[in-house]
Length: 458
Image (tube, rainbow, N blue to C red):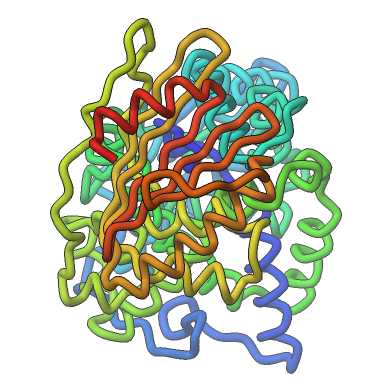
């Protein structure tokens, strides 16, 4: 649900999970190779036999470094990068078409580059609208500052990144060589560099971020991050057990105070493309090896439902037809048309009902569309949802009633035209279920709710 337009941000949360899992797998002292192991014990079938780059001299890895970094350190790091490049080729069974450019920055320049990147990615107007939306839906406290929250979280999570716009890897200086955790991060990001050369995924995801829905974007991103996380898991499994322990300790000792202070759903959303993408990738590899993953880049999933339930992707089960919301309010700005998707519904209800009820309420998703409208400090949403069955719609509506009464603070329900109308805490909510679909309208302005009901003939 949190929109980003670049694929540069690395969530350390996912790496902590992976490193700990790798340590568990290697606790018996055994190791596996990067080409035969897999996160779920399945054999990784390569997509094709390829010719790798061969031995790389440090001078073969192009790029620059900060003036404060000595040529000796630069050479040391490029030697390690050359080894990792070859290991990524072998593990992913694809050759680099060109050796990626690597920029090595000292701590100050790396921090400045990350901050500039994040500031560019987080458009203030978009974030302000998102903040108003999340507060209306009871997902953020009234005092929360979403812009600062994301800047703080992303600032502490980035350990290195691949910039697809420039085809460039950016890594912080490691005077004593990469630590085990840093090597896993670089391996992950080099996988991005490799697959971007072959599948040009960045342009497709940029288009989804600009004109598609957040659900479409999250589904595509899960393929990209799931693939890189799968390869990273193989790398972690192959580490010497002592290095795996060092990596785990380094990951677990990292500063995650900003992430820990954020609402739980934020951490879940940031981890989604890594964790659920890994589950999705596992399923593809079980079905058809790495060839199936290659094919997924060329036919990306269109919904998070397909990521959460990979069989639906394998059957190419698409969402039902639904017309985008076209409602308007005089003097109000139409801020965004979007879709929650199954994953967005799960996030919405995360703090409202039990995990089992969240899954039950969201799993009946067939399609949805909503429009956000802004008027100064006021915000309104008109949401149309279609479920797979009448029972699925009823389950979700019951959960939304609890959500309206709880996190949204609209605790005074009454019947209105066969539907339910809630008011309280400066929020008005209207819910009307019609067989297997429902309409949900909410606003900080009760008049807006009435006007939207009239337009939707509810």
